[in-house]
Image 1 (cartoon, rainbow, N blue to C red):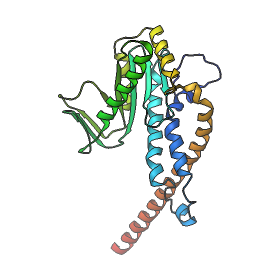
Image 2 (cartoon, rainbow, N blue to C red; image 1 turned 45 degrees about the vertical axis):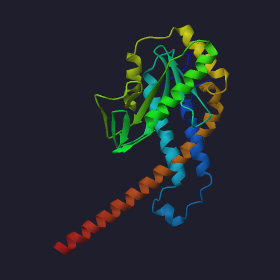
Image 3 (cartoon, one colour; image 1 turned 45 degrees about the horizontal axis):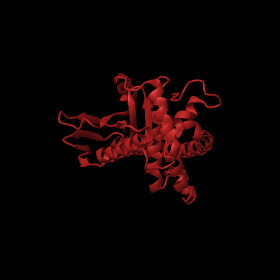
Image 4 (cartoon, rainbow, N blue to C red; image 1 turned 135 degrees about the vertical axis):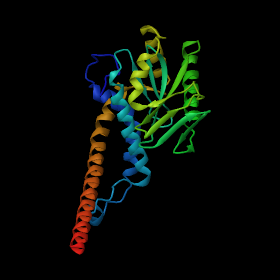
Length: 263
C-alpha cells in the first residue's frame, strides 16, 4: 500500500492511509451483511458463498478500491487522497498534476469500450461518464467557492481488471478512462499544474466543508473495519475453496466412473 499523504506523519501507517479510501465500501458491505441469516451446516459444507446479493456488490467494490490503492503506491509525496463518508461522493486526489475525482468501477473480466460519447460494458451502455462528469463539476464548484477562483477538476474512471479495454478514436477527452494498473503511471506523466503551496491550500479547502476528510480522520474507524472485513474475506475464500474441492471431487468421480465403463 502507498503513502498518499505527507511522509513522516506520526501514528498513521501507509496501509491504513490508503485503505481509508475503501472504508465507505467496506462499511456498506458489512452493514448489509450484518442482516444476513447464519448459514446452515449444509450451506457451509458445500461451500455456498456467505455474501448476500446486496452485500456482494459492495464487497467487490471494496476489493476494487483496495486494488486501486495498491496501484497508487507509485505516487510520490505531495499527492493527497481525500475520502468522503458519503458513498455517493467520489474520492478526491490532489497533487502536482492537478485535482482529480477517482471513480473505481468493478468490471473484472468484462469487455469495456469507450467511444462516441459512451462507455459500454459487454455491449451495454452505462452512466459512468455522466456520473464522473457530475462529480467533477460538483467538486470544482465546492473548491472554487472556497478559493475564489475556478478550480478545474478532472474525472478519472479506473476500471478494475477488465477483460479488455478499447479506447476508440472518437472518445470523450474530458474524462480519463483507464485500466486500474495504469492509474499512477498516467497521473505521473501529466504536466505539473499546481505548486506545493497551491495543492496544500486546496486540500485545506476541501476538508473545511465536511464533504471530504484526510485519511488520518478515518484511521481509527479503518482499523476496526479492517478486522471485520478480513474476517468476511476469510469466510468468502474458505467457501470458494470448499466449492472447488467438491467440484474437483465430483469431476474425479465422474472421470473414474466413465473410465470404468469404457474399459
